[in-house]
Image (tube, rainbow, N blue to C red; front, side, top):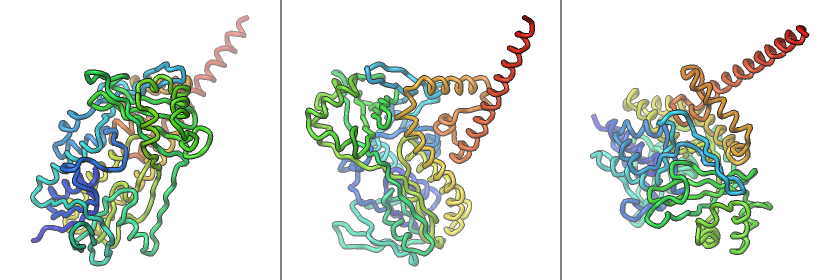
Length: 441
């Protein structure tokens, strides 16, 4: 019996892990990527150079034997370090245990690790600098162009792991009854680098995600192994405090010294970086169905791109890969059943993560600096310590458990109702006690 043949479009993070798992499941995988091979020419991903790997991603990496290798090149982030406009800082731990940490890792380094592991599988083959220009949903097949002549690759299934602007998805969008939406934030992002201190030390707290919340916009910074930090500015495209408002070097320096006074001195070439680095957009993409006739399927950002404010994009894609692998093994050779079950298991959770990510943007930029926010987080952690089997804060469920995203929302709502009911009961009891005491006078 011949191996199931998979033509895969895209070999980024999710694509590389998908190829690895499909290869180990017995599929013959040809994976095409339009970018150069990062193992030979360096990473040129066009996206943020850092990401945060948490419980879901670590579980996937552990299944393929790569967890420890990735942890060895990462920096743990155990909480948020909040920076106010006077340069004062306040640390907010993510959780209550040593395992409650996100891990900052280079997107390029992680991609290389996954590609190397997948390429060691004898039935997995990568071809780089090959751009997908068309997909035949009936054959199924995909046509690629590159330095060599165009080639049409045929298989039992075409799998689109080609990101938010997926060519495979665009082909599915021509079919009848295909739903699609893309929603851009009014904010974009730009990256800057805080260099390491002399000797390779860190100029800020190492094991933290740094946040400069400014109400309506913010800046964050993730640590790198070499002692540097990658800063990401999340600002409106237009308006008073926006990318459009800063046009010259003097404006840039003046703005940072006023709004980010503690980080401005740490970036010697601040104006040069700011003016030289591009502004990128932030988009949420939803669609359905994720598959067609058992011949074409989508995975990762190709069917559910989310904004990065929960740090779950890569983790979600890795979880996709694990679920797809299980479906492949339950329905060997039956791609209609495989892709149908995969979508049934993942669509609701991808939609929930999209909503959670948008909500967390507002929380990060507007609320993390407030006393009320800190008090609420303290109450949540206290309840978690007192009732670890019955209560878990939403953020911890998302980052430090593998509870399905949609279920975390339902659990958080139930917990919120319970807390409100308990608070109301406590308030009523306090009033009754006060009345009883007053009767004694």
